[in-house]
Image (cartoon, rainbow, N blue to C red; front, side, top):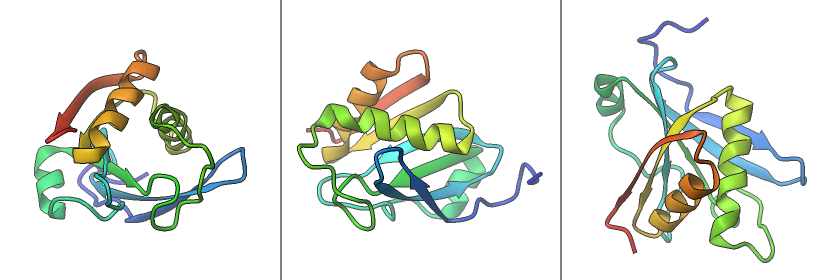
Length: 131
């Protein structure tokens, strides 16, 4: 088991039931408060604050490339609402029952879609400079 103050490994690949792969990163503390940070448009899983910011805040930050960005597989016909299922798949594979979600710029509508689609799992939601 990881120490509560141990940094998270940076790279994670999540395979989905539909055959797609999502490329993810984790930042902060293994036992920290889980928070998905959804990148803007364009953007990637590498959009983040310096590692020590998350560690000081006691956070476990999960970022990922939305479908068609970076190393994540495309999802033909993708709509903003589809992000909810992707975030839940990542959370399930990481063993997270509840989590926060934050969207930056073009990620704002995506964060709101996750919160609306998963009200029992999303503990808090924020948009930063949202569209």
